[in-house]
Length: 213
Image (cartoon, rainbow, N blue to C red):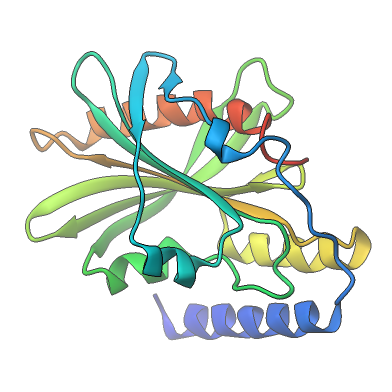
């Protein structure tokens, strides 16, 4: 990340913290349904629930979350994490993978945004972030986005701007972070990226049943 972008990100983070500290009357918005009810069968994918260490949740500061591992009949694997914040005025802000991944030893090889088409949904076309990461010779594809208050946002900058605007105009600072990770098998990045995007296109409308618009 360039010095200019680092300074911009730092300035935006500071501005967000100042605004959220000033605005103390934003509501705590509950999930429509708790993530304890989140399905372990999504399309052709079958999954099992998992959990991070307790100290990770303390750092994240989420009010509700879901961590699951999914596999399809071809043996492809996806890890899904969803973290939901009812109110960010008194808690931590959402952590960006661009900061967390390097802190966990993963190097970000490539970063780009991807357009997804969402059929049979009010949200018909969205953009999500795509990261290629590497650690000890292993590579993974990461897709992530922010989904809340009726929006799907890929950019951390726009997510912070919307957070400030909605805290002022709607008295809402609820937010969610969604992350998908798939290993790159047989050194074929395109295959892993394709099934990860297909899963995301099914997942986004499903999340509308849980995350308030």
